[in-house]
Image (cartoon, rainbow, N blue to C red; front, side):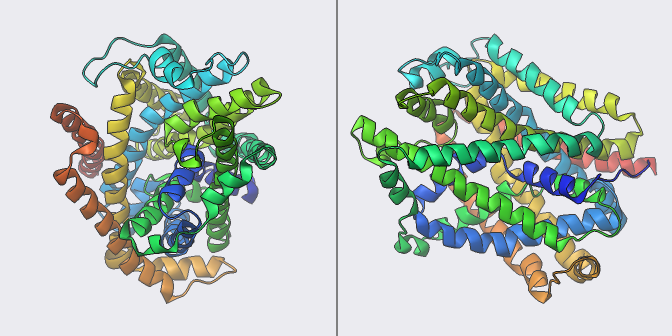
Length: 487
């Protein structure tokens, strides 16, 4: 297969930033920061960025650029019979984009609801009962919600068109889909900090609780947030870096992308908490009583805030959900592109055909998340694939480079190309710090799972969540076995 190159370095950087920055920067980071020490959380968060996030970015960029291949062949070319790891990474990303696209479908619908503020006064009832039509449990499916299905179709058409020509089309799309949400985020920051009560919300967000730094969970969540936020372990960054021109700076790119992602999370917190302070003032309650995590923040709390704005409410509603869509699309199509580049190397199919097949293969199982019980299944799938699948792939990746390949191989390669040189501290991060943190994370998650099953779901539903993760990883292993037999 003829190797494709990014048109410019800026295109690559924007694409990698777009993949890293996603919905979690707006709704997950602020909530975790609030929950674990407020302003004090920033300390372990930045330490985690330096000791894990950026070192792993350098690892994946270096591996992709050195081999010139997507994840499966990148690992295989460095160590025979290790394509399994690359395929597992690609399939973990595929397993995530199946339901990630459904969240984008929600945002599509809410973008159009914003024109008339169709969610009304009771935004919680509208989201859970009228929009999702949520049933009493995961096994009470209740049929499809057609507006969500239609939104999912739009999402997959958008993803398909964004990557129809690979890095050539991605490089053009990201100039809009990465820059636009930053502009909108700036608008929300300016609007947020000028609202009554904003300072109280910001005080709640930024006031350090240094006692929280003694809690191991603070550090664990800081590393987890960095790990998940940087799009590491999906094969995305390996695939993107494989299309960098021969003389490309690796370390500098990794620092730019890591700092951009971390900075966006921090600024997202300012935008969110300034408006939460306003909501608390308008409702006459403490800030802690309006905090919501996950979908509740984006689809319940924020529409409530928009309802209370003194002017231009539909405009700010449209801008908010446009921001969510443009944040989400880069992450979504990067996961598909990682699969597409790996698939092209294996099957030699034309890119448009392969992209269509991948999109269709993700759309069909994604329909279960568009049923009235879809939120339950989305929550279960995300819990198992994020807490276990991603961590496991990242752990094995660090062990592969740290002990089987030897970190010196990647370190010396990237230093030849980069202005900023990395020393043996990077070896220590890859060989010691990252494996220990991920083993700790995996062990703690398993311990918690055994002690108290997730969210009190029925055992059958949790078993299906484990099966979802198992199928994803099994697909990666089987692809590795099949590739080995074909040689």
